[in-house]
Amino acid sequence: MTQSEFLILNFNEIRRKSIKLWEGLPQESYNWKPDSQAITAIEMIRHVLEADYGWNIIINKGDMTNYKTPWKNRPFLSVTDELEFAEPYRKAFLKSVGQFSDTELNETKIIHPGNGKEKVLGKYLLRIGYHESVHAGQFLSYLRAMGVNRPNVWD
Image (cartoon, rainbow, N blue to C red; front, side, top):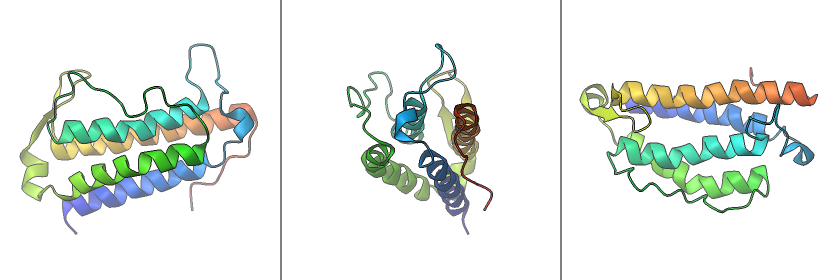
C-alpha cells in the first residue's frame, strides 16, 4: 500500500466509527449541549462533515481568504441529511488525498490558515484524522451526559 492508501484507509475507518456514533443520536437530542457555551450535538456533526470541504481547499493549496461554506444558511434536518449533503465533499477530499505521491506527502509544505503553522502534508493529513477522532470522543461524552446508549465503536 502507498502512504496515501493508508491515509484513506484511516480516514474511512475514523468516519465509519463517527457515523456509528452519530446514528446513535436520537432526533429529540439534536439540539442538546452540555452548557450554554458549547455547540449542539448536530452542530458538532456538521462541524466534522463541513471540515472536509475546507481541508480539501487547504491540501490543494487553495485560497481560504474568502472562504464560503456550502453549509451556510442550511437548516439542520437530520443526521442522514447531513451525511448525504456532505458526501460529494468527502469524496472530493479523499480523491485529493489519493492523488498525492509518497514524495508529495513527505515534502509538500502546508500552512494551516487557522494558526499559520507550516506542516508537512502527510503529517497535516494525520492531524485531520485526529481532529475527527477528538470530536468522536467528545460526542461519546455528549451521549453519556444525555443518558443515551452509546454505540460500540470497538468492533
